[in-house]
Length: 518
Image (cartoon, helix red, strand yellow):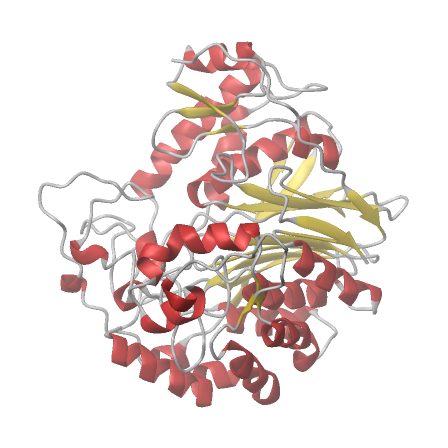
């Protein structure tokens, strides 16, 4: 049940406007992307540049050791494309290496039963073949206008300067410290002298050298993306992975390919929504919005009836998702940013290591933090999303690009695991069904339905919202704080086709994120 509550003090974050805008989870990365737009780059150039920069200024969320998806609207052709650079299990992976702990409950983020030694969560056994570099190269080659070395240059500069230690980076390192300490290169980098780094009361600048990441970025810039999968970087990756006991081999790296695929596209409330298909949250978003129907339509803030309809739709769609979705053809086959440029191109890009600091492993030769994508798989055999060699996992990413009358309208997405889908569904309803502008939508308190546990209702919502949902589903009233973030971490951009004016904004509860005009 819910409890009586009063409204929270409101947090205000103004949307940024201009001819082109970048919105990201890190303000410096957004500024870097906006600089690309200011120098004549298009939205794809800015997105790829921002993506690489995020791997150096926010390394616990994403980087070259991970993967993701990018949804692109091309104004010139009025077409939408998806770049799939999702991660994949090694062809030689042995499922016997992931035995379940008998008799234990499910403490994991995704509700999976525990695996011996947490091998699906931490360490070399938790790593999937990364797709990040291949995806960025595929997007740039097919849709960008800048050269490879140009988009990598800001990331190289950031890596050369080192990771700035501030209150937020200290908090993130502290959150992962107990497991980072298990792996020598990770501990040496993020826990100097064995402790979480913090700045002193005088605000003296403190930066952390991110292992050999700068050198790896320079090699990648000089030799091209192929070096990551078949060249010298690949050889170093394979050697470190083999040394740590991973099943990933040089052959797995060489076989990896990013793909350009058609989006999942569907109508809702007069807009056409495009998102990544297949093993993402895209199909579940489509089911959610179809089930919600017209219940959220109107003006201003939604009422309890509308939120209750959305909560039930999310609950039912998640139940079907977790029971039926997965990659059943093993041989086949989370930071978020958005960009809009002056020509009307839109990009919604999600990239991830999955968990905070991914597997917690930084590879010594390359300075890459590696993903723990194995944790996307259900460790219980015989299910659609069960772990298997050469298989792609079911992921939570949900990048949406909306068009209206054929013109690009907005791009949104989020990070936050299973909380991504409900955040995107809430925001889509606010923008499409309630007619809100971008700034109003991001300040509208949301609900969260993540497939397990009660419906989370933002304490800032009227009490009647909690009452309406509690009549259908269990409810928990929570606040929205920078940490923990109870409602995912979304960002978005929007463009008015008639005037060409664009806006961008990031999650209002996270002071580290931001948007920048270029």
